Amino acid sequence: MTPPATTEAGEINADAGGTPRWIRRYVKNKGAVFGAVMLGGWILVALFAPWIMPHDPYETLGMARQPPSDMFWFGTDLLGRDLFSRVLLGSRVSLQVGLISVALGAVPGVLMGLFAGYFGGTIDTLISRFVDAMLAFPSILLALIIIASLGPSLQNVMIAVGIGTIPQYARLVRGSVLSVKSLTYVEAARVVGNRPMRIMFRHVLANAYAPVVVLSTLQVGNAILVGSGLSFLGLGAQPPIPEWGLMSAEGRDVLRRAWWISTFPGIAILSVVVACNLVGDGLRSALDPRMRVDG
Image (cartoon, rainbow, N blue to C red; front, side, top):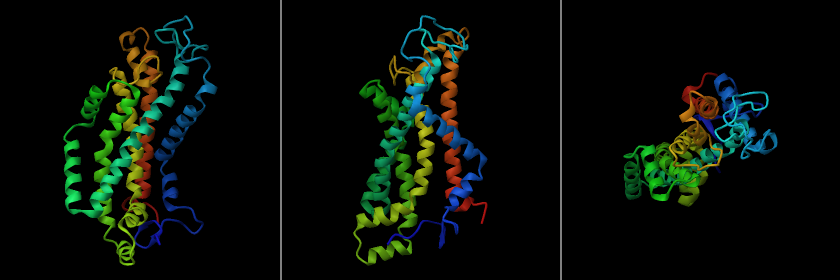
């Protein structure tokens, strides 16, 4: 039977009322709560964007480079499209890039780290050397190489950014598995005859998930930032897709005369990345027993 998750040896991570202690620690962190509210707000915007947009984001309204006003809250872009509506719809694109990229990197990375840490030996050596080879390339350079091979598109950006995150997950999970697999309950599961696959997924990985959750939260913001940067360079989303990085690039040549075209998408990118970092830092503080501040 899988033991309950703990924060310290023998201590169940829940109070008498059943509320997990990490949640109580998380809500005490004002920055983390603020980040969660901001990130939750963007998620709601992404979900309901088609119903709250005041204008069609693809429609040319005939008033190019109009400054922010009562009719156009964020002004209009170079083609006369409502920038506020495009920023709202762009939240769907950017969050999709972040979530899918992280999933594409987390799944193989977690599996590689799990197998390397649990089996060790030759498997560990092969996987570790492969991960080291990937780490020899900066993530943005690796993404550029992949996109140069596959071609510029939003889907290829997700693949490129996801592949770039695999080494971080593999190394993190490998270290967590090495510290967990020697514990008593894992040895007991092995003695009673559980198969290695069951032990890995039911006992080892289930109790090494906290660092993966924290890293995934941080990586969502990083993936959005990298994806926006690639789109800014023309390697990601292509017009007329309302992607924040691409929208920022469209206004760079008229920044002095029409500052709003690049500024508002840039603020959107900043707010989501900051929110993800605040949530990730809050989860790390709440889930890591060494950073506990309450009893």
